[in-house]
Image (tube, rainbow, N blue to C red; front, side, top):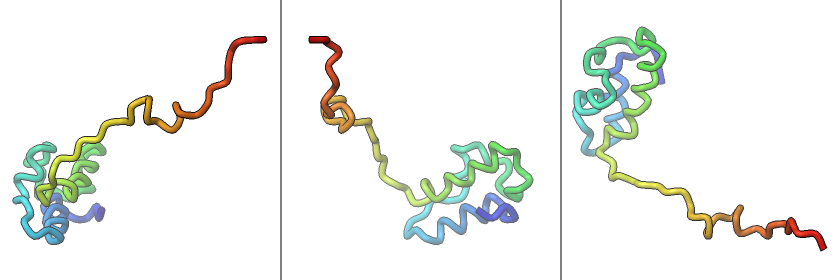
Length: 88
């Protein structure tokens, strides 16, 4: 991300890649940058500088994708044979 761009410019740049992008306000409000939308990214605090990185992921109205870790019975690590602790 270019730190010399404003938050609005970052969101707008990413919106150009989508057919039906969200408005800038819809993208920045959930991450708390609505008050700093015209500030340059390099003038934001460290945590705020990371928030425009979310723009590419939400600007295009993505469908939710829920991921769940594999269950123990399907995990490749758990399917490996385990050494026996019993002594003969």
